[in-house]
Image (tube, rainbow, N blue to C red; front, side, top):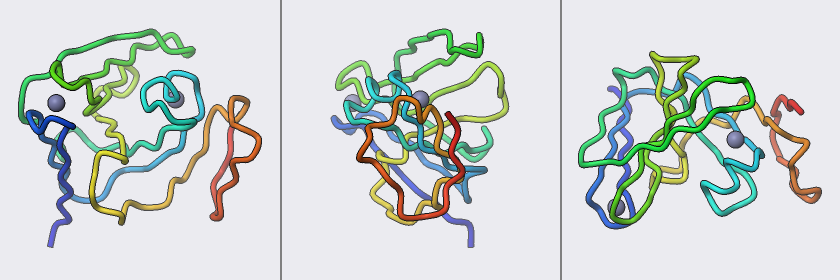
Length: 132
Ligand SMILES: [Zn+2]
Ligand SMILES: [Zn+2]
């Protein structure tokens, strides 16, 4: 049976449903992920567009990444929860924050990126490929 994971924003007006397993999961220590989460790294899962459905009204914010590509955040206009990100470099994919989901069975991240911004005491007790 197809795995289904669901998430809601803090005020429950926006809902997200992800079907099947993500293409990949990554940890990112960049300052933008730190600002998005308020924590010291972000954990996000990349899905193919057709695996993801978003219900409810969202507002978009676009920034230019270090790569020069655009990253567009869709967030709830009421409570500000970021529900997904779109990368102009990967138009067929959607990136969702793993922390939105109640399910604790997301695959172990395969990448840890922007490690030059990683807080010194953070270590992962699993095999993760790291990129500075
Ligand atoms: Zn909300
Ligand atoms: Zn990041």
